[in-house]
Image (cartoon, rainbow, N blue to C red; front, side):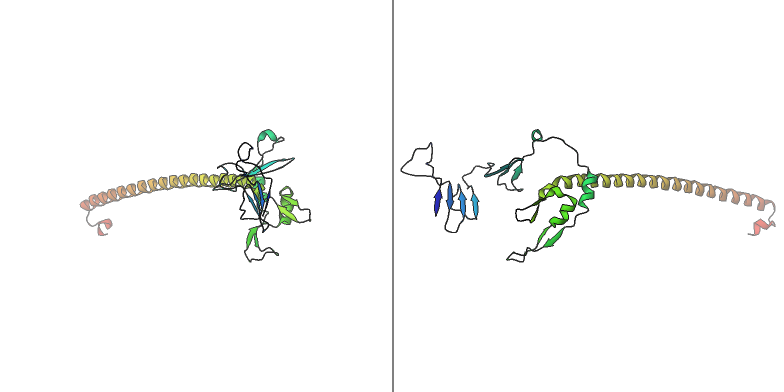
Length: 223
């Protein structure tokens, strides 16, 4: 095991020649940063790191990304403060939805994988045709996809679909009300006609009764 960057604990003074190991490389090539017993190829931090504290930071000219272990979510946060940005332009839901509809998700196996576990994703070349800014080329010429870049498109597409569905539902409700109104009006007219028909029947019966009382031989009395 190799321990690099030894640092005395506390304020810097040694106590019984005790030191803290900042970087450890074990016999299997596993690297531990602030961890003397790495269990992965790269093991950063340990249980001694306080909750909510970032264990890694990655930075270039465009911004910074930090890794903070969390019980939910990826725990990766990148620069997004509006004070760092300019030339804002809204991504419309229609634009996002139209572009998403051009993508085809696939399941696949990596050729170099020692397992047969299938994965789900996109072909980088297909994404490059729709959203070239979501694709980068490695030093070896192979393409990679920024999958998290799809999140803004997805949220705007969902909002647009929600708006459309709500519009359809509202239209359906309006149609249902109109149909109910027409049915109620038709039922009212039918009830009125039925009442008038019953009234006519009674009047006809009364007329028949009167005529037959005057002339029982009348043809109407034989019916």
